[in-house]
Length: 263
Ligand SMILES: C[S@@+](CC[C@H](N)C(=O)[O-])C[C@H]1O[C@@H](n2cnc3c(N)ncnc32)[C@H](O)[C@@H]1O
Image (cartoon, rainbow, N blue to C red; front, top):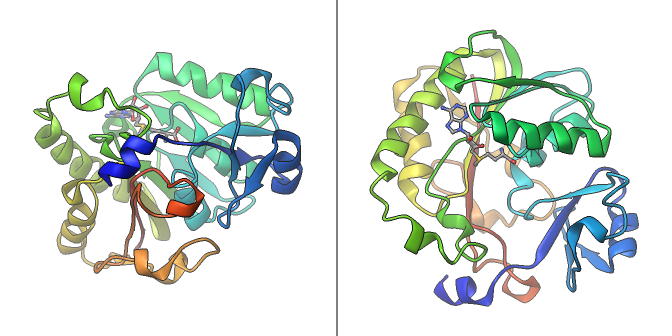
């Protein structure tokens, strides 16, 4: 993982519609999971298809939670920590009815800009996730705030900018948000919990503990059987552990954890 962090990160795009077309335009390659990896990117806003809103920048690992959640046309989906909006755009592109919420007004502005550029729509709300109480949704995405240790290859300054003293607080907040999100989920609904963290305390342990706290909650392992996902990445409790040293021959991926919960 250390070697992968030193190698840096390629530029990945999530296509709004046609991955092959985006790959051709940007001289990139379509990854097995459907993202497009650009080997020699220029200035992002000058790249073909940016102004037309045909794609947005999002690491291949970060694009997987929504692919696994698999939102459908007409479903109501709540995106609880939405900004800057990579996953909101994916959900909106599926035709689902998205409510995108984030506590940061400044970051919500970026969600609106991204929606406008890509000609997609979502209901945008600036509010703390714990204060939102307008359930019930068919599906919920909780991309919780975390240590962001999965993005170290993009942000080598992270270990210098942060000393980790806030991680304990973050872990408590993740559990609180997960419990709150479950209250907003309709019976039979599904909740994607994910973090861009390498720490099991922010991923595997959160899911294990949520399963112990909530009767009738289960993990959907079958949902992980999608193109591009190696079955060896599936964890004991039924989540998916992604690491920067996976896909070494393709240029790696961000560290991420995700699990699809059903009740
Ligand atoms: C990991 S980022 C989300 C990335 C986003 N899902 C995407 O795909 O572009 C976490 C977000 O959670 C927001 N956040 C942190 N604490 C929050 C809270 N209590 N309620 C709502 N949003 C919160 C932050 O402002 C930040 O935008």
